[in-house]
Image 1 (cartoon, rainbow, N blue to C red):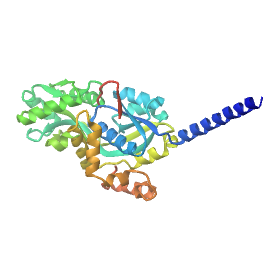
Image 2 (image 1 turned 60 degrees about the horizontal axis):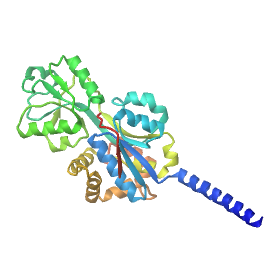
Image 3 (image 1 turned 180 degrees about the vertical axis):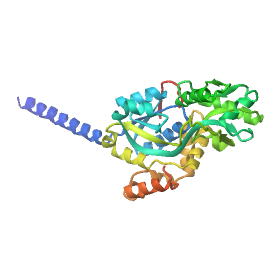
Image 4 (image 1 turned 180 degrees about the horizontal axis):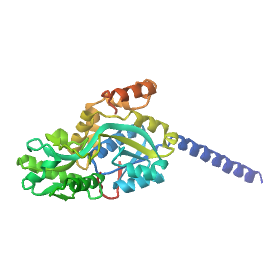
Length: 320
């Protein structure tokens, strides 16, 4: 009987310990997942965040998918984070649909832009001028993934401007491959473009003026998480509050990442080695001034050049 009593007490003690351990994990679990689409800035930011958080003892899983399942998964809590939500226009429909189940935990980049881009040697400045030179553009606009919001906007531009060029869907990497080949031969080309993107730091490109405002105004990129994430992961939430880039910083990071295909984690670490100051500025700490609300808000209002700053599971390729 005494042995049975001791055994029961041990079982109860073990149950209590497991419960307490579970509560401890619930406060700030050491495992998180980040969803990303195959956009250069999203790949770069996701792998950089993974590299930095894993140095702090986290297990970070990256999950690649198209934009629609990413939003669905984050809203359902199947994926914790998405670092590349373009607002207030590009992804507004997803935010209307899922916004009540999401929370914004950071703004990695401001002054993001969408539009039609051409190399600087192309001697036109506006979308209206495309038809007059359609043969030089081979009667086509090189696009990205057919489901991308940018492609929907470009289809709208084709209609509203009465363009006689066909919008050719492809993918982000295919579009930049066409661009590179055209630039090497000084051929005319028009592509669906966006900033931040490494192609703007590698090639001399211009956006065509959009007098009808089809592509909207400048946007910002938000890091969104499953609602309640900041309460269960306070350290990670504080990290992403500091996770902010200037155009030069993010363009350089993306350019370096392009040099490490299928080795993105290595590329992220190379960039970190070039910018060791990033670690102190991004990671939450009592001495990090960026974690102080007043300083953070002042920097945002003044647009100061704040330096903010695996395991990958692939679903399918996507676009903006």
